[in-house]
Length: 450
Ligand code: HAM
Image 1 (cartoon, rainbow, N blue to C red):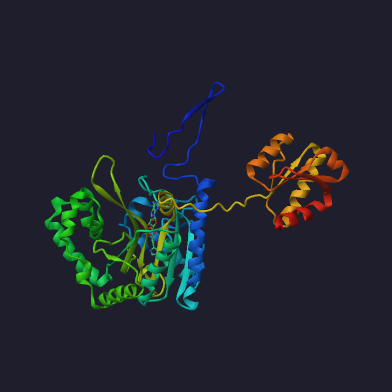
Image 2 (image 1 turned 90 degrees about the vertical axis):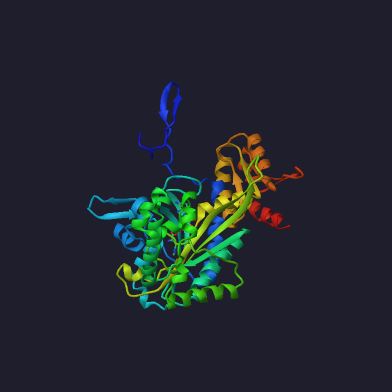
């Protein structure tokens, strides 16, 4: 069996075996009880982005594969191992978007956004696709909310970008946020640093894990963010990029840190933070939520870290994919990871489904018809109303009304329907009164206002 094919349970129904189809490996349904978390995150993120002058952009979920190969780099894990790339029936090479920065940059060029007033500030939100080994917090289809600023070179943007995401997470009531920043320089100072790093790593090659030995040849900077125990001693003595930045990159980074200090935003320098995509230049950052927990039966305190978002500056991306020389800076946060953390931290958003105040119960076909029309009259006044038109028993309808904790149930029996009246039952007291059907919406609306 294909390793990606989830086991399809065979269920026996009336003697015949039946296959139950499952979501493909690494993908998941978002059920209503979870969608409220997504909605809450989208709302907070959109409001904050709007406040800072960002406008929404929607790009297709498919793009030319080459866009990502050029922007992220052929040897990046995302392109090499994780991209869903395919040839269409028409012979085009397309990919399901694994990230949103390259599509935004493609759109900036294609739509002539360089003619707009600069900087251009965009936000996006939607599903992205990466062929990952499924594990906690890693999906093959996941949601990202991202911000991109094109056309501004000033380091103030880098600091403000971190601040905006920090504000979003704070607004979502997260505590223990850790911001990690680093600078990976520009292609010229990085080339020199890469040589130093490779020379050093070669002397320690046998102490590296298998993946890092490969990275040493293909993408040596990635050795620095390897999480393997075996590689940690090698990493800890490796030369650091920030000690080898050129004057311009050094000045830029210094200013970013000064702005963060001015904003009193707590951050940590992490010389091993490199991010895995070729388009980054200068500032890179990630935000984590750090929590400590004691393993059961052990005195040891374990620190768990989960990257909620990542980003940085990408001053060469627009040029790399065929546009003018245009600086850029942005970041994206993983919605699934934020939902997971909200659940762990017991942050529960309110459901956006409105609590009904009125229930319409009906008997007989005339009662049902009149009830259906009445429902629309309440809808026009935006009064939340509930029904169970599929049920015929009054008893079971009243039971539902009780469960929904509505204030009033309106009963349209056959007799009332014929007489053009309706019963208003106040649920708390059980008091009932009969009124004219054409007056009931007005009556109930005024009762609800009291
Ligand atoms: P990234 O670090 O690859 O950056 O992804 C950003 C965030 O998306 C991660 O921090 C994580 O929360 C979430 N994420 C990534 N992969 C997965 C996955 N397989 N399952 C669940 N969540 C995931 C980018 O994508 C850049 N485009 C960010 C950026 C925008 N840089 C500049 N502008």
